[in-house]
Length: 398
Length: 222
Image (cartoon, rainbow over all chains, first blue to last red; front, side):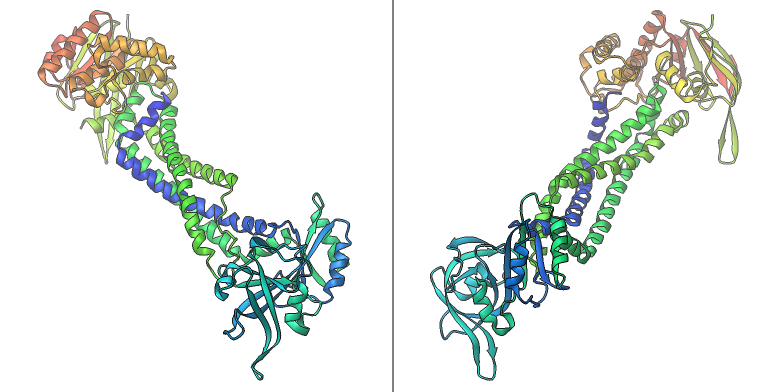
């Protein structure tokens, strides 16, 4: 039979067809979201790690970057030694500490998060307005939008950063008055995190003896085309007292931590595929059952079993394809909403995404839905093809 | 010369735990160009006989030959091909595909036979004109009256130039005037050489046939 005629069967019950497509679209959207969730976390994490091109992180032994308050000693020597590797082009030390800020000399102290950075080699922020710190600028500070909002500060204002508060003397052991040079977006901050940044020595000084020549993490950039795993292995061998991780290692750690998200995605994805299969199977079974006398007539006229099977399968495939494509669009829309909700969880970098659309994965999801649709049509198609012609026509006549 | 022959045909149905003998040893031979009416009361086995002759059911015992070929022993694929090429069916309830136009319904067996689209479109138009529906070719089946639908069904039965047309109560769903149009069409078909076997309990339709086979209780009685 002509293929176009097979498609027209879908027009018999337009409302039923539309509702079926809508049902398949919802199931397909869910599958699409789960596919984006299952691989999206890793993709997004890896993308985030490589935002500024630093492929390697050096952290205190047994920790992950900014995972704890632990710091590494002798950071100047360590950075110099790492920079000596022929494949390393930049080493960016980061000191992370908690401190307090005050917009005016007598105002209440606000809790802040401080980064000590080397403006010449940094992988932590992107400048949004004002000017960047210059190397050796011990009087300047960079603010992220939440910190600026909290302190009511703008570019050019002077703020005070204090640390090592001593409750007994009601004072701080360290204090610096700094001029806001620029506004930045801290790449690894979670939503609303009030972070400020100074050059490393200023932040170390604010940290006092605890931070002297120490850093929380060294971000290492290998030259383009370098064999990063080999560089990681070399640095590991040369510096056994610290943790050297490539982005792949960090992604693996991250994957282990987020395994429940993958499991959830797998279960919900399988469920949505199952729902789509049942929906298509049920619809086709009902349709075939209604059309048995007509199918028996076609068989009597010489239409082969193969043609009957093909028609039912095409019907299932057409429904699935329509629902699947709408589902992908719907899934992309719902993923954005869900992403906004999930990334607002405390402690997650705001630049992080749970749902990352990957064309290959979405195409695979669509193919899986289409396969499910075809498989769902097999039983109704078999029923249609095996229907006894004479008995069906007799039943119709009585 | 014989076009189709059923010999000592018996057919038993198993309904629940009961055996019902629909045919109790029927022998019928039809020559090419004949117009045969199989008449009798409801349940006498006439539709069953037609289904066995048309190869859409198999006899419990006995044999059916079409053009010298035993068809009761053929497998589904061969039988389907034979029905497609050599037999045309007309049913009481037309069973046109409602989503297709009159022309597409007629084209359907030709498409199944692998005829090119342009050829089958021209033949469908020719057949629809033959049954008086040339102007209705593009109309959907659902836009046609009962009589028109049955005429489209007849055109569909003729699509692959079968050697035999089998019709089961073709006027059963039609009023007297529309039924008369179908009778006239059958008369014309037969006059042009088509072999027709029509099952009916309509005496008027039976009277049109060149030979009337009367059945009662699974047997031919006259």
